[in-house]
Length: 450
Ligand code: G3I
Image (cartoon, protein in one colour):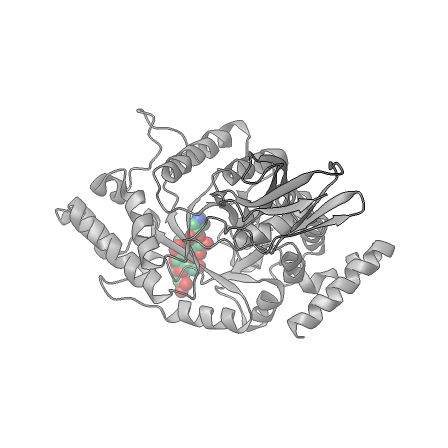
């Protein structure tokens, strides 16, 4: 069925569900990606080990995919300088055909070191320069090959310790770390950003989602490390929380963990979600999604496979949305849909605007096309939709060129009604556009005599 037709059906269901919730519960299952689209969410699953009959389910339900394990270092560069993009190319073709975005997973991960790299690191008298050259060649080739087609990457994977080491450090002692030094992650981000300035680059890790005592330690380590990268001007755009959940989900803790990244302008994704005993605890799915979609900087929810049959946790895990017989789990679908359906629409709107900010050009433009009119007892100000703006602020003065004072901020619309006006007064207005990366310069001044 064409995607625009599905959207019309979804809107009808949303309308009918206001009259009777029965409609959402009976007709929901086919249209997961349409619910995600309404709240501007990337909703994904990797393409890997899927039987042909699941490919339709993949493209019907998800608007985002990952070429399975095929872009891990050992798979994509099994011999030094020899790259194999066959499977990933076919996934990108499939995704483009079905209007899905693609993420590359994962460029630098110590677990996916190919034999030749292990040999060099251990027996090859490795040097910092030699290792950096290997890293740069790898990133240049892989990111470069997919430039313009894959626009986000899990760049560095699972690099952070579960708790600080003896001197307070937070990095695992991998070959990358021990040979290059602790700034190896800075280099990876710089190389990848140069290879494709438009790609969003993520640091991905596990067990950093919640505020339960054990996990909070790691969640804080990841946060502080990312804050440091941002402060040093390293081009990082996102944090991936893997979200391999074994029992209950700490909804409020997850919400707070995601929220604190918003001020840094950092996107957050759940990148590998699977939840043990899913059919018995669908509530954990709702909790994860509730916590996530309540934040505008939460952009992407990925489930780590579709069917339990191929889960890395084993076919008995009961941890995904489809069972071993490729049947949907109604309770899990309902849980996921409920969370997406109830998501705050204002946050969703802001998420859409945040998603649209390019990776390499993030300051909001200056609002233009200002017009001002009197509307009864009020003054009505309007301006044009402004690229990279998330919200707007309005300034007012009584004399030309100021002094100006902010009269309203966090305006979502492209208009403002000034209700605090006096007859026989001159008013001057300017508008500013705002996003987490900064505030635009003032718009041109516009004047009105009331
Ligand atoms: O496809 C071959 C098959 O032909 C062969 O008979 C079989 C024998 O072992 O291996 C199969 O490949 C396996 C592949 O998964 C496909 O299932 C690889 O050996 C195995 O190493 C690979 O494991 C993957 C693992 O990462 C290592 O790359 C898992 O599928 C994948 O789910 C797992 O994903 C990781 C994320 O990348 C990072 N976060 C943790 C997560 C879980 O470990």
